[in-house]
Length: 389
Image (cartoon, rainbow, N blue to C red; front, side, top):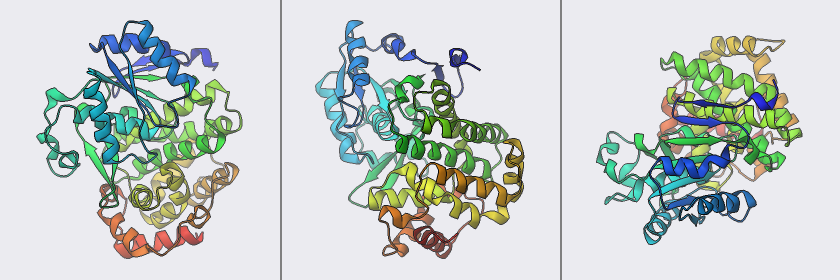
């Protein structure tokens, strides 16, 4: 299939407008949602790039008063969110353009939530029925524009935000945080360097695999996850080796979206460990999932063999056993220059007890195929530090 045919308008799980060049529709999307003064929110690494400046200019040319907020860390924190809320009000904005990778999108969605709330951010942590405290009328409309193929935050109803005072990542949730319109334009991902393409692509793979293996009943999500895994297998190596390949870039940005759609079925041990490690070490989320993946798969083997063998057959592995799938993961990681151990990114065992406790308390732990104890998480972590599979 040529990349010219890789376009479409989909309405699941939200309004997705897919295809190269769709960023040209940004101003019209804002107007559809009643915006006259959108605030484009992105991370500091993207703010000065032409793609951001061009997006802002396209809005200005369409008679929109478009502002920019970019004071966001790679692991966004509560202070970043509230600074964005202040910028939103100072500029008299009436909507949000969430632009960037997972950090920019998550922060933007949290800012869109908080601009109309009187309660503090952490009151909306995804615990119990906290989401009922939200003043829904105050949530700003959101147009999302992902520039990486990894987190799939553009189809999510939550944001992962670091509480720096507690050194923990918290999930902020409300259904209205789901962006109303999404522009999936793979041309925006062409400039991603190979190592970021690899790490974010493996993040998309982790979402699809953990959704597939989650024990909850959700056939819709499971079907999406299986195809998402196939797309990563077929297109991630090309996206890394030939970043200008629009077909591979498009299929990966779709696989990323599919993973985040599927993981409403649940995540698992990869994320239960990646979240505390990201909070404690400020490490890249996708890279953490990529490194942790085989260790968590192996620890879950007895509970997931049937599903892994099924997806191994579907994606066409010559050896469709559990070990065949595990070896494929290891070989792809190696070919993408993903480190084999956490030690290679300067994470040691010194905080193993804390990491294990935080993992058991992480919301993602509830979707793991087996309920790991603190001791089991500790052992998986130690194995990942040492590279012992």
